[in-house]
Length: 108
Image (cartoon, rainbow, N blue to C red; front, side, top):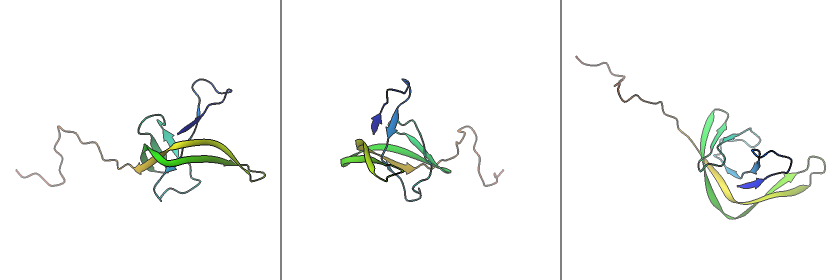
């Protein structure tokens, strides 16, 4: 993860550039919401899907570029050796340990 802090930002604001590895179901250009980016397991939301991320070391260095919208030139903005690899989280309903619910009718 590469961090880019500007002098115009407040103490609590930082700009992060993240290299993501997502499953094929994620489409380039879609909005992805990332929470807890500084934790060991950030969470990502894409449409109705929830992903749990884990930082991994990449082989080599990742260069991050930005394309200028007018002249289409690429400008180097950051470098990182980490990848945020995300896997889809399967949410299960919370079960109450005190109750014993069953789909089968009870025998009496």
